[in-house]
Length: 415
Image (cartoon, rainbow, N blue to C red; front, side, top):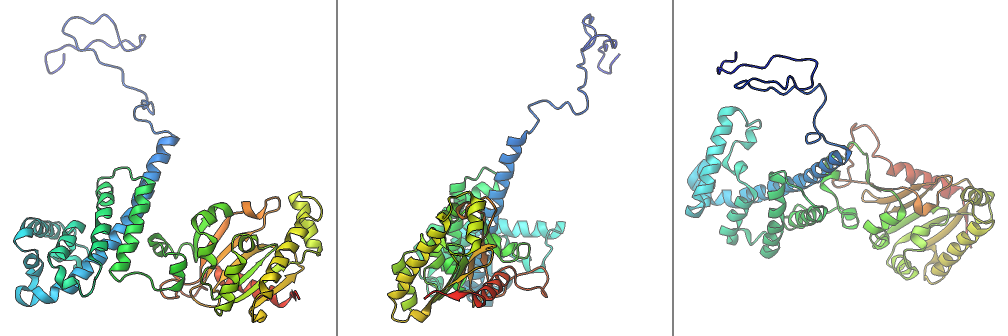
């Protein structure tokens, strides 16, 4: 007899789900499911796991950008408004700056701060202030209300407001763990980078103008040395990182490979002439088209005999024509090597801390256009690369630069 006055049916192990002959007033109990027999409505398959991981990765990237923008905006607001209100209002300067129009949200921030104090959520004493509890829209409201104070430092008000409008969509999605599309994430990253630049927090490293510094790159730089991007093949590299972005504006270009197709076929000779005439220096190191290494490579790729050597020879002839148009041919050097090629590398401004390198290893039966590509940045944060061990070298960039110099010293010039 149950506690509610109803009689439980007797157990019947011989029948699935118990006895069908249940007397009136008795409660029928469903047999519990076995261990691990979770129904399909609760089970996540491979596709579901892939979907949620994709959502989490996009939300994580967006959160990093939003966090950077919010911290930068908080710093700017404090630097501009604190000297105005703190001498009169002391620690309550944020409340005074909010004014009557912002009393509701600033008092809410004060209350959240007090609760965080009592529950021990304030782990860093630097966050024990009202400003740290203001959200991005509230920080924007402070800027708008006091724009005459910010105008001497931030002269593009419309750019700031448009960027913050774009970020508000992303902030709303991320804060509620909703799905974030790739298009909205890209828009948020562009808006964040633009806003940080307007607020004076953009990178002034020359390589950042060629290959924009990514927020995630700075955070995980000690895990991946100076590798800032990996592409499955050259086509996808050029889709995201066009040849003009790689080579345009270079003051020094060193390239090593079999035929250097990435440069020769994707960057015009006229642009190379302009680079050299503007004071740039170009050194190109091709595999000798008459060497036995070319024949071995042709056998690896399964191409007709002489096909690869003719292609390399055509690229060399094209670069010779470019060199002949220069007033100073010494600024444009071409040499060939006879050793077995191990990789192709394009080192842009490799003699400085702001260099970019595009590197591909040669695979036995794969053409260069189909080979995975690494993009390296020689310096971060003003030329200092972040590494896990401060005693380590900067990363992969110096290794490829040293290899280029060794092979250049052992190669022969092309007349």
